Length: 361
Image (cartoon, rainbow, N blue to C red; front, side, top):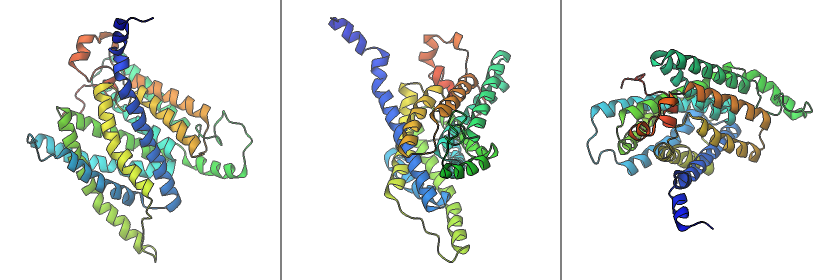
């Protein structure tokens, strides 16, 4: 039998204390990925304009963020914080546009995994400011990520094109092969650029805000700025769609597609990622985050009965995870407990990119 002292020590261990946050992180990412698949099915079945759909989701999201965070209350924010946050809103809007276009053309699996291409900022940081030994590791990680993205573009994660799947395919899957082959590596550029912009907006948000509460208040400003930037583009989509056809462009309403994107895809995932950074020291572009997303993708691919190859998907994720690990590697041998306690950006928290001044904001 275990003594009361041993039980109390187990409960006080970091693993036991972090378990609720790990469950929250897994649940939040699961619902976020679920919203991505719902959004993809909605766009694919209705043919709705991507920009118009995202704008309709960002409007209530920005209002909710403003009501919750109230950036006009509390300690006044300086212009050095507000102006970069407004610019970050433009980057966020461009990210949403490219990511939405990539989701519609490449599918949810490729769009989600392409978001991790933002780890190339770690390679750029290492090339500009790192040591030679680390530069080669980062370049090797970049090559591994490119290989993984190339395999994804060739359909390794699909049962119809994966080299690990049997050759017995139905007539419906043969039709899917034509569309998959037409994608190629160039078709992956849109979601890849979206992933880089996503990492860039995280860099700016982290460097502008000194405290977590300021980061949340500034994020409300960023989302509002992104919504304002998307407004003329959404109206342009609406006008051009109505002028190109006799019927006025309509945005079919689907309660689950809109609500899941607003609640899980935009609002909840922001707070979940914040908790993961603070409590678990886990950022987006990290192998641990990729592992969580990969597990959720497998569940969604099977639930939605997508063209999915589990062995090919695992191979792509392993190569991509190895590339991210090497591309975002730091001097792990010099990390001790004192450094970790003083600088939360070290260790796994630094996996998005190095803390070198690549973006002097």
